[in-house]
Image (cartoon, rainbow, N blue to C red; front, side):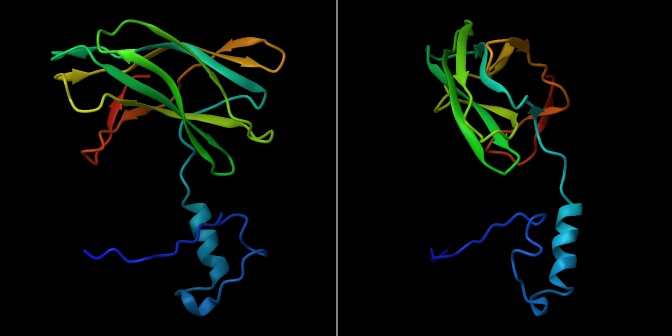
Length: 173
């Protein structure tokens, strides 16, 4: 392979008509129909919707490792998205391979009043130093602008994705 410079353009297909001008000759159908087809093909947003007033996420993380060759740390992050397509990977905690509970407090990013979604979690233990890694998140709570707390329920189907493999593995929330 040869590394060549490239330019990529991203746009919101739902907001593009009337703003972005595309030549109909570039596709096999008019540009408006192509954009409409892209909007209709969108899947549901991933994760759990958070109230627009949410400012802080707290909870407990555990990262037990079976067959650990040595004690080591696992870095855990939350994946948060906005309706405008902005995505954040926010550090939650460094947790030990012994699986001990580690409390965390995460200040949520300012999204300009747009509701956020808790789209997932990421755990990175570096080079494998055990036979089985687990990520356990519990006691999730949100705090709003007024300091009022409420629990967060991880609803829907969640999946574990190993970067070395393409197929997600369903998990229990």
